[in-house]
Amino acid sequence: MNTELFKKIDEAIEASERALVADIIRLVNIRSEEGDPLPGAPFGEGPRAVQDEVIRMGEAIGLHTKDYGCGVVSLAREDRAPDLGIWLHGDVVPAGTGWRFDPYNAVEYKGCVVGRGSSDNKGELAGIYHVFKIFGELGIGLSYNPAIYVASNEESGMKDLRGREGDPEAKGFLNVAKPPRMSLVPDSVFPVGYGGKGGCLLTLVSDKPIESCSLIAGQNDAPGFAYATFARTDLPKTLPDLELTVTESGTTVKAFSPPVHGAHPDPNGNMITMLSRGLLDADLVTDAERGILEFFRDVSLDIHGECLGVRTHHEILGDLTVFAKSIDLVDGRPALVIGIRYPLGITYEEILSRIAEAAGKRGFSIAAATGGIGPYLIDPENQTIRLLCEIANGITGENKAPFTLSGGTYAHCLPNAYVFGASACLPPEDFEPGHGRPHGVDETVSIARVKTMMRIYARALLALNEVLG
Image 1 (tube, one colour):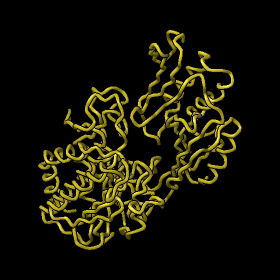
Image 2 (tube, rainbow, N blue to C red):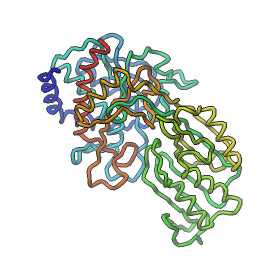
Image 3 (spheres, rainbow, N blue to C red):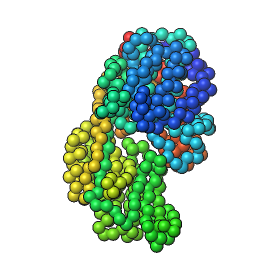
Image 4 (cartoon, helix red, strand yellow):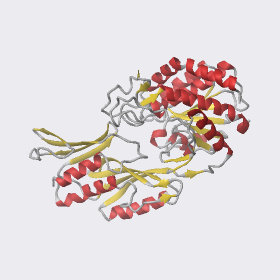
């Protein structure tokens, strides 16, 4: 153990704090929600703007930059094929409403940076960049070539790695380039993740329309909100847990629940549950329409998919989960969009077949389905996992074991890839419940936690000389 070198690195990390914060803010202020594909920007102007900024940052400190022409760029220490890839993403989920702070005018507040994408994962991106910068300034050499990869479609299906059918701009990194021998993905928590559930997205549309009201929920510009609009003003004055707005043309019923990550649905339901249950209890739809709302209520409450016939448990990866994401219209009929995270033990094809049968019995069919990513699992006893786990626990002072993930990351798509960090989200104590989390309102990244991540990554880069040298 080179304690003197570690001391120099840690001192440099502390000295970099102001520049680190400035870079996090600079990246967060780029509104990088997925947009319409453009030449050179297959996932829209915002994600492309992050990559352009990162390339400028890399060139400023002498890193070798490369644009793969598919929504992925890299910053390598040497001008040759990288041996290690550290995979981050510049795209973010839509900000939505209800923020106390401006999502794209990031501020430093009580030891955090607040803004959309700060913890998922522009804070980590800035932190890893500064580790590379510090290694360069201290003249630290490595026996292998590490690179930062910045991709642009992690939040919407990882088509930047896998490709998008029919789009020559989004060919997919894995179709145009050779991945590094090993990859680390700092888009989770420490110590190290060695497997994860698969994911898919389904749209279930009713065979019949709803004529009593119009329904909508979970839209990108209003995550956490569900609405029913009636062309009548004689509704009950109050409905439990729901807000009513009456105008001359009708009444809008609104439900709200704090947005959560799709990998961790609330067993008590969400805004879709609240709205469906409220309308049913108040008997505000016809008998013929009740079955539609009952389906929405039941599916949004049954987070393990029992009512859809897909409940599955794996000894290591855990339970399949179902997240009722949104309500929309398909050909004038109400449709429920659900996200499913599934372990080994069931396939995507089996999920489609079982849900088609179960939903069909309740007057619904599958209108659209996206396969997403499959589950994966590697041996938790291998040398690299033990090494990374020891390094992370040594810095945090914890004694945590390797783990598997519910959410999807680039580790699902890359060979020999490990989820490594960064657990950088720690909202200030005065934030309201539900605020400050990744994908939520007032998303925050803890500056102290980013610096801890930097210390861990610095030691990991040095230790990987033994693995990759």
